[in-house]
Length: 224
Ligand SMILES: C[S@@+](CC[C@H](N)C(=O)[O-])C[C@H]1O[C@@H](n2cnc3c(N)ncnc32)[C@H](O)[C@@H]1O
Image (tube, rainbow, N blue to C red; front, side, top):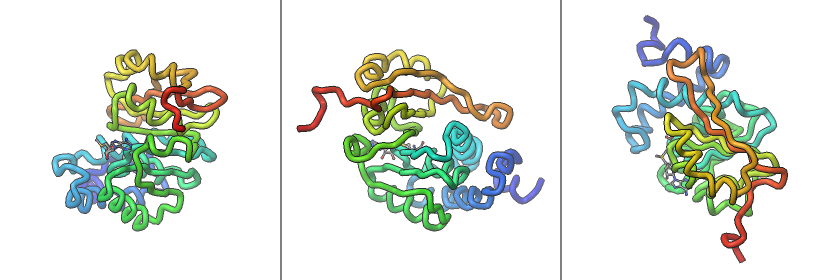
């Protein structure tokens, strides 16, 4: 067993991150030290940081193109935003998080890792509607799909995509979000699996694509 494995880093981490593995290790180190001290990650998560958190988020970067602009809503400890941004240094990521302490931690980590492709914005995602537009929105463990759709689809430009990391409940969440998907301009929805052949448990993502005019804000909710 080498030094990396002793730190709980699976061999496959090198395959996922390739040239960026040393930055990914710095991120893992932050999560297991300052992340726990600042209360962003529970101490019980530390032994499974790579498998359960970093790698299962990192593989979602396979669904993103270099010229995409990505907003990660409810980024918390940078999941999936930072885990993806390390793999995609040419893609712009915006991490949106309302809690001041989390924002402060994210800013510190982004600076320490030298991630020039990442900005951190303190806001609730719904506050950004009408002010910013992105081509991709990501989210993990923020809300059920029926709640995420109103927060994220108005942030998406033409043919923009929501990538929501979901587990076994994905089908049920899609069913329950039917009305919201129609109201906020979704034109397609599907479940995509990423990381098969690399991860023991591949990541399930609900992908929602909006129409040519971008995500809609239903008339009754429009400001002014
Ligand atoms: C359970 S944490 C998940 C954090 C991270 N995505 C992860 O998977 O570890 C949910 C995060 O969503 C944030 N949040 C809650 N409501 C939000 C909103 N309206 N807009 C943006 N973020 C929100 C919370 O502050 C919190 O950091």
